[in-house]
Structures are given as C-alpha cells and as structure tokens.
Image (cartoon, rainbow, N blue to C red; front, side, top):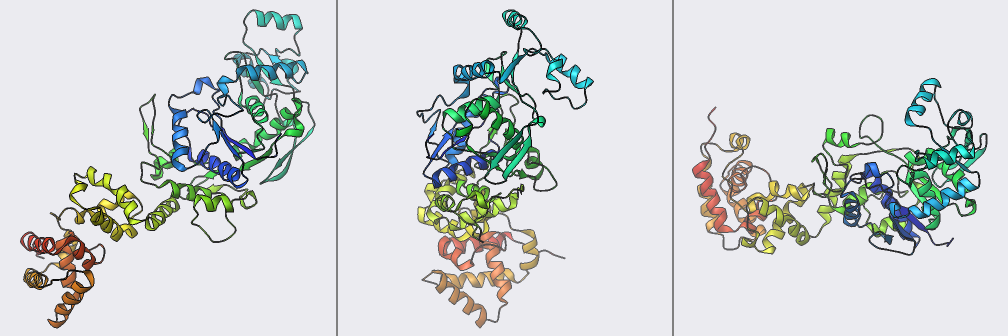
Length: 511
C-alpha cells in the first residue's frame, strides 16, 4: 500500500445527503488536503431495494456546491474503479469464494420466517457460535444437501464465521484503542444470492483494501461494526494493510437527546439537507441550505466546528485555513449539539464580510422576484444600497425587506410609528423640511446632515420627532440605515417627492 493518504466518502444513493454526511465528507476532504492526499467518492448502491433515482446526482451537486473537491469517483474516473459498488459484482464474488474456500465463511439457507421463529424462541437471539448449529447452513448440512439446495435455486446468504472469545482491538484516532470480545459479534451476512450483491460489511472492506484507502473516516454510528471489519481484514489476509479508523462524534438534536433527524429540522424550522430535495416517489419537497440563502462557505465553517475545535477562540475559517488547522486530536468524543442559530450567525458574518458588489449580484434575482427590473438601477446604486443594510441581514433573502425602500417608494406606513411620531403639527414641519432640502445643492450625506440638523437646532425643534417623521415618509417605518446616507443615494428629487406623498397620505392617530 502507498504511504500517501487516501480517504473515501461513501454515501448510499437512497435519498438526499444528510447534513451529518456532509460533515463526514468535509472532514475526509480536510484531512486529505492537509496531507496532500486523495479524496475518493464511492457510491454504495448495493441495497437495490432502497435505491432512489436522482440521489447520486444530488450527492455530486451538493459536494460541488460546498467546495468539497473529489479526486477519484464515478464522474472523475481514476485507476481504482469502478467507483460504484453495483458495478463491482465480479470483484466481490471472488472474495466471497475465498472466504468460503478458507473456511472463514459459510452458506446459510434460513428463511425470514425461520429466523423470526428462532428470535421468538430465544431471547436476544444472535446468529453466532452458540446458535449456528441449530440453523440450516453449510455447517449443519452435508455438502450434497447444500449443492442440491443451490441447484434447486433456493435463496441463500453467506455469513462470516466468527470464532468466539477472541479479543478484537480497534485503534481509533479519536477514541484510542477499543477492545471488544468477539462473542458479542454475530455472524453477519456478507453476501445475498437474491440480488448477487454483497452487504455493506464485505463491500466496504474489499473496496477500501483494493482502493488502497489509508484512513476510514466515518460517523460514530458505524463504530459497533468496527470489530467485525477488523475480523474481516484478518479473515481475508489483509491485517497488515488495515486502514486507520476514525469514528466522528454524532450530530445531536438542538434540544433533547438523540441524533439529529429531519423531523428536528421540520419541527424547529431549519434544513438538514445541503440542497433542496424533491422526493421522486412522494413528491415531498425538503428545504436545503442553498435554497434558504446560506452561503456554502458559511455552511462549511459551521459544520467544521461541530465536533472539532482549533484549540483557540478562532471561529471564522476559510477552507484553506480549515485545511491547515484541522486535526483529529481536537475532535470531540462526545456528540455535538446542532445549534442551527449558530449556523445563521455564521451566514450573517460571511455576508457582512462579503464585498458589496458581490452581494449586489446575489441580490439581483431577489429584485426580479419582487417585480423590480434591476436594469433600471446602476450597479453602483444597488451595491451601495445593499452595503448600507447588510449588517442587518442573515440571508440574501432578507435584503428585500430591509432595502426595498431604495427601489420602490412606500405606499403604506407603519401604524405604530405613525401613532408615536406623526402628530397634528408634523405635516407643517415636513413642509418646512422640504424647503430646507430644496436649498441644498450638495446632497452628500455629511453636508445634508449638517444643514438639516443645524436647521432643527436653530429652530428649536424636537430632533427625534423631526428625524423620525422624515424617515417615516422616506422609508415607510422608523428604522433603517443612517438617514442622510439614504438621502444621498435616493437623491434630492425623490426625497422631496416621498415627503410630499407622506404629508398627503399619513394621518395622525386620534386617541
């Protein structure tokens, strides 16, 4: 085996890629890039009954969106293919035969009904050294009986033969050495004649070995299968080339106990998939981070810190910084609570730090959604508008609610602000303000502010009442960026027109 690091992300095309799987892919990618290694995408489609059309394309698109680059895979090619397990049947058959010939596995004919009956008969039934002698398999049947059953077309499985009372040591880069007695490991099914495909356990071991994978980085949920995989490596004669195992901590519910699920996202209103998913069977649509307005960089940064920390207080990381800083030594053994509000915070921070012109380009489709022709405004205008309000948003979709007054004059005014800020004498004050603005030749923010505030002071007017009424006529409510920055961008004529419209349409609330 080469010394070069080779890792693999091996999802099943049984539906959308869960955000926990995305984190697993990310950690594989960071480790590979940090060590100048290779990132493999292998599609584990041996469970033909659960295959979902479109899922494989979804996986590729999600990884591409997030910037998790693949070096070898179904699309990328490589020297270790095929990279789809359903195309490797001949390879698996060879190793099934090897295990049978070496007496490391055996054929079992037990039907589902027979297995159910045995489970009812024996509490906590496990197919192992204690019970295999009671079952219909090649250990209890003669060779002639086995051959006759196979010739007759009876369905069978191949099970690994686990010797009891052996100490199985699993070395894990996060959890250290874990020792398990082989008696707790049952004779797992490795191959099913019904579909001529191996199960996850055999296919993974064979593929990891033949693809020269050096590190198997996967979720904690696979930790119970690690002793079996160690025993399989030994049974196949590959003990000396066994990869290093890394079992990542689970992603946990934001509240309560247990593993993060789609139901948690539905209940609390956040996505658990990277991209929107359209179920081809049910027609159901599940939300995705991309469609919700999350930036891929923010999602990557957020996920990286769920179960790993850099050893200091740094929270904002580019992908290159993550590659440099990542280490399994700083991965937690405990599960990480999925704080979706923190995910929003990351997106907010990335938007704040984004160049205004780039954010403006992202905002243009939102203008179209609201019936605004972006070509009516210069790029500079849109850029300055989004720059003024971006500190107030968490998503690109939030820009419209905070910046729509830059693109369309208000036709409605916030009732609570009218009640508080629009009095009987306010229209007259606003008419006087119009005359002041008409006399301003230089509407730059600082100059207009100096003149207007000077006028308010000289006339002993109430600063808050005047400025909030001014804002109400221009914005439609008493909130938003600095008022004179708004005035500079919108322009003198439009400002005057909006104040006049406000005077005509806003009526004081009579108590």
